[in-house]
Image (tube, rainbow, N blue to C red; front, side, top):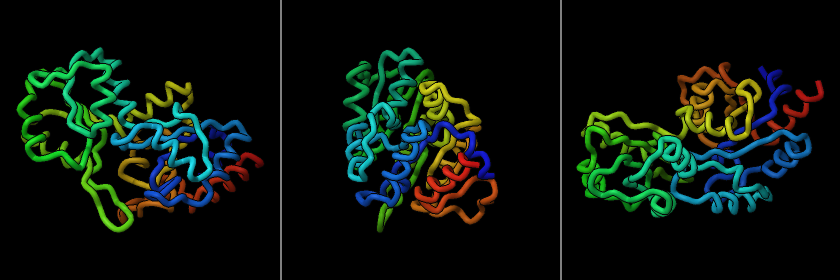
Length: 261
């Protein structure tokens, strides 16, 4: 299976659990990026988080001695913005973080009565009243898009609720389909591949979460790879279906070997 690495010329990395764990850097971040730059193997970063601007992720990567251009960092905010542009959106309503609202309302008109699109993200300050108000705005022709399907985000010693919880409530009470922009939906992957003009067969996704990173790669027909530095794999998963790396150092060593052979 690892022979595939010989032809890989583009890698999509998840962030949390791969390059850092909350505020802790993960071993091998600088080494893998230095190697990829040396060998002219392109890469980018793809997170399901819609709470922060790309500048914040750039700063977090810098703490691990990784200096990358912000155009290599894809958040679901950036992808939602792209989706709205592709679909000629005019007015929207955003249920999500201040950052998500500010970014989207700077480009699209806020409509608090009958919006064409409703955008769902996550913010810990969202109340049940906010969710109720959003549900009451949804009409037959309203399109609903969401940053991601995650229901829980694992932290160092606890969990926090995520966007998928809100999606479930809204979907149950409206019986409307919600378009997921982030992983494991293929939209984000397709958008990234088109931007970098890369082939699926020569692309690999490195992530620590099976339900988003691995399934997203499988759904998009690109090479999936799980890394052991973040979340555990579900017990039902057949490990032979994708590549597994112990760490970013292990990834670097296997890439070096494959490229030499």
